[in-house]
Every structure is written in structure tokens, then in C-alpha cells.
Length: 495
Ligand code: AMP
Image (cartoon, rainbow, N blue to C red; front, side, top):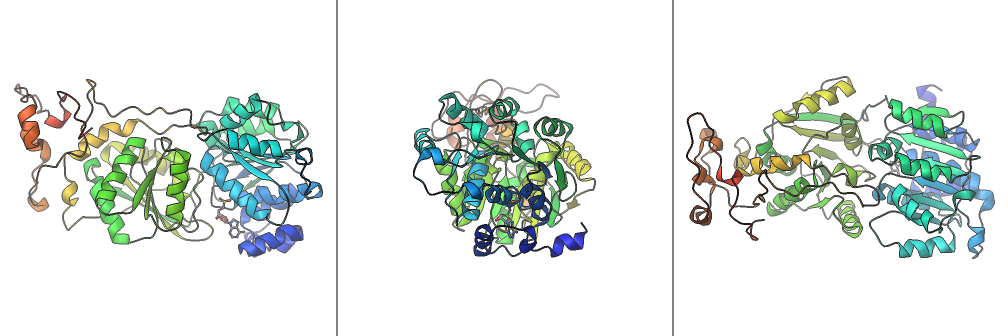
């Protein structure tokens, strides 16, 4: 199929049932996306599919529409649970993606009586149990919670005909391989399997080979390449100046929605607190937030009540906002592939997007990995400035305090059981104080390096009274700023 044929394709040519076509018309889908053009006809024929496609390409419809159509002969309005066995199982890495997929399928199947349910961890089991008891034909699930329900024999996967693995690469990254294999073992071998992944590493190929039979491979966009519509830029900047630059960028662009990625939950919380203090409508989502808090923040972001959503990789997975104009990497991700996932949040469904990454000297290695993966350098842009000075008021000791937290990544699993976050403590076991008043600094143009200032310059009058004096420095030994020295006791006002 040529590019022109793909671009000119129409939904009528895909042979969708009028009930489904009507839903697409109602949703305002005028033409299929390339992944839909390529995958839908093969899936309608019952073929297994390996889809190499990022989020934002329309992959959810690419697997859902043919499944719905093939299930249509079984559609019924009976109240009996037995008439609504699980026929389609869709596995997703995170609860956000599960909810997103559920919402999409609900939309596509709005003119059918199919019952759809998303089950995921971090919320009480009981409402899910009640819904499962009534009978559900399409089950969207994160692996951990599905296994919990399987253990209590509430779900029977023996009736599944269509199995989807969505964002399979992410499921592997999150360590779900054993869970996936346990689940698939309960699904009949006679089934259709649709396997979607943004990247296609040897491990992913191995998993696909073990699960699929004679699949059709469909690929949109280059392997491991972010959407071409995204204008990517890098700001090379010291870690301690990132926050000021971010604030300046947010103020400069005045965009309705900006998604900011942080490497850690603590980093995300602190950055959000800072932005809120500076008058930005911002909220954080990460795996320590309850499902209710995440949904509330996401809804507010979607509704335009929040301009900035600060997220970790895990929590951001599955976020789908129409025409998200900008993604900012406040920290670069540890794995280059995650960069592709992150910036795939913008430049969606044909709309241009912008991705700006703040890269400190400590992250230059990660940047090199990303540029290697992209096979091209990312354009550099000057650091946005607050109030005319380089980094404005951000040239502070607080940035150094933040840096130590960047190691504890948000590693929560789909069911929210795993959380590898370390508390914000320095070597020596002392809690790092937050939100201390900053030392006043001179005009940025003539700014003195804060590292060169005596420890007392970083202390509040209260600290000067209560902290032990700085140890006398021996020749050649660096001054230890007071903030990095053990505190005598945790002060609830600042911890
Ligand atoms: P996905 O890649 O499935 O997450 O889809 C990304 C976004 O594209 C979602 O907001 C979908 O509603 C939208 N979308 C998917 N297919 C189409 C289409 N054919 N026409 C217009 N929008 C679409």
C-alpha cells in the first residue's frame, strides 16, 4: 500500500458494520489513521497482529474496532451474566491506560449492548467484583489486579477469543512478564492475539513470537522514532536553574496545557509545590497518589482548570489529551525509549506539538543515548529566563537540595503495590529540609556563586542559632553548606 493510498483511505473502505461506523461518525472520526488502515482489515479477517505504533497513532481503535465487529454476532441485551462471558481481554501496563482504553471502547461500542469494564489496582476490589458478577464481555485490565480476581475465581478467561497486549514494551519494562504468562496460560490457545508496542526490542520480539500465530506486522512511523510532528528542543542548563527556567517557559508560552515529566515522585511533588507557590495552576500525578486523586487531576487538566500537570513516567502512561501542545522533560528519563513515550504525548492525531527537555551536565549521557536512538541531534535552545536574569531567583541553594532526590524513580506497578521510592534523606540519615527561605542573592548579572558563600549565608536566623557551627575546614577541603550537613533534629515546619 502506498503512502498516498494510506492517506486517502476512508472508513467505508474498511468494511465496518454500520453500528460501529455510526459511532465513529458521532465521534467525529472522518478518516482512518495509517495504523487503522493497515491493521483493521487484517484483524477483521481474524489474523493475529503485531502493531509497532506509539500512543497517539490511533492504535486503540485499530484493535478495538475489528474486535467489536467480530463480537457483534454475540451482542445481546439479556440480563443473565451467563450471556455476557468475557470475550475480549485487553492487558495494559497502567490503570490510566486501562481507563483510557475502556473509555475509547465504550465510545466505539456506544450503539451496541456490550458490557465493558476496566479493572486495575489501587482501588477497592468490591465494585469490580460486583461488576464482574453481572457479566462483562470486554475486560480491560492491568495484570496485577486481574491476577487477584483470577485467584478468587471471579473471572473466567476460558471464553476469551480476542487477546490484546497494549504497550507490551512498557509491560515488560514494568516487570509484568511472569504475570502476563500466567494470564495468557488461562486464555484458550484458539484465539486472536493483537500485540501492540511502541518499540520492538529483541525481548519484545521473543514475547510476540511466543504468543502470536503467523501474525501480520504493521508498523507506523520509524522504529523507536517519535512522532515527526513534534518539534523537539533541548535546553542545556544547570540542575539548580531548571525550576526558574521552567517557570519562565510556562509564563512565556501561556499554553493551556503543559505536561511536565519528573524522574521522581518527590521531584514531582516539590516542583508542583513550587509552581503553585508561583501562581501556576499545577498538580502532580504519580504512583503515590490515590486513583481518585489522579483522575481528579487528569480531569481538571483536560477541562483546562489546570495548566500544568507534573507527572512521572509511570503515572503519565496512558494519558491521552487531544491536542496536548507541549511536553517538558524537567528531568531526562533514565531509558532513552521513555523519551519517545514521553514526547509521544504531544503531536497527536495530526496536531503539531512541542517537546522541550532540560538537560543538566549530569544528564548529558542520557541525552547522548536519546540522540543515538533518534539517530539525530536535538536542536538546542537558550534557557528561558525569569525576570531578565539568567535563571532569575532560581540561582539558589534549593536546586542542590533537589538533586539528591533524582535517583528514586517512580516504579509503581499497575496495581499500585510496588513503590520503590526512597525518602528524601541524605547520607547520614538526616531528612533534608524543604522550603527554607532562600538567601538573598545579588543581581544575577554580578551574581556570586552560592557555593562560594559561607555556610551561614544559607541559614535562616533560626538555623544560625540552633545549628552546630560549620566544621573548621582543613586546607583543600571544600566547605560543606549548612543545608547538606546533618540537622540536629527534624523540624516539622520544614520537613
Ligand atoms: P490512541 O493512539 O489510540 O491513543 O489515539 C490517540 C487519539 O487519536 C485519541 O484521542 C483518539 O480518540 C484519536 N483518534 C484515533 N483514531 C482517530 C481517527 N481515525 N480520527 C480522529 N481521531 C482519532
